[in-house]
Length: 442
Image (cartoon, rainbow, N blue to C red; front, side, top):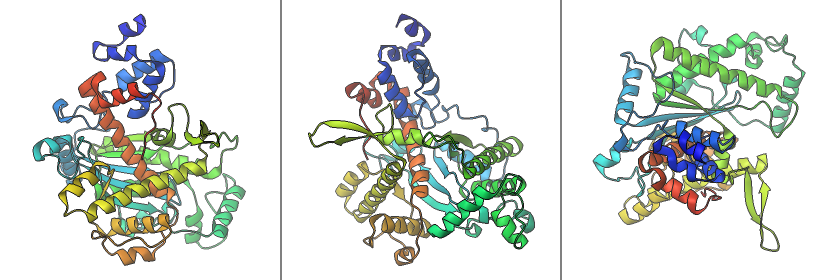
């Protein structure tokens, strides 16, 4: 304990008085890895807690250390917008759930911490001061169906030209999986049958997907002007399986291409974008874990609590349900928009807001319709509601993952900001001390 206290700086000496389980709980609440012994974990907390992208206004806007891609920007419109957002402390978060047939992303707009101090609590902050991000865009794309930008002579494409991912039947999915298993690495780039367009549709040649990666990133930067890009971290194996699926390798290669494009644009054009990988397991543990593994607490017939590891299927359903509850809470808050008292109570338990945009409203309405399995109630804020009900948006887990990833990352950095400001007196640390094994509730 003495060696630990001497190693830590004076600002974080209170960490030396906590148990290892308490340090892990703080790490879970702030998105920091928990591996290693107590000393290593305490030093990691000391090093990474100051890397806060949402510091309180008392500590200044540009406190976060960020990544190496933050460089002086040029004078084009995209870069000026990014600089303006960063100066005001506003965040424009682009959260990406990786995939090739089903790549999903959510665009979240977050008011800067100084906004609350200037304009009062308003409707974009809870009573406790936590920001409520606005869902400004929500899409799932089929990267394999992207047009070749080289043939169009364009470096970026309008979002309206992006091919949206459509649901496929089980027969189509099985056929695609069988084809991917049968193809060898030498055969991936060229399928002998069919016209050239069909060859490219099923081709995973590196040069083709490098072009798709460049088109995707430049189009997203131009359209949404993000200050932060979060990319789901891929795993080579799932559930401890020894085999590495071919589709997993393809998505992993495409993931690396996205980072390469972002890094190149940062170095060559000076795009000041913060890029970070987010591990899905850490997001799941933040909401449902006990700090040691992904577990749910259930009651058996004797009413005693026991822990049961959450399966992959249960995890997907839990995340879909959580996002569905957020969207329902947002709709309920919009219904009470003229009742200031009810609105204030609704916003306190609200995790997201939805922008008054036709496209995002259609996706939200379709998501709720499929999640609830019935026709949702038409709200005052729902735009083009009937049109949104006509389309089946297919799988919900990809859309849920990208939105949950962005909101969770924001929660982590809000918590880091509180610890930076209040230290051991912050609400995050107090909650850990009161109940080390507490689980985040929806």
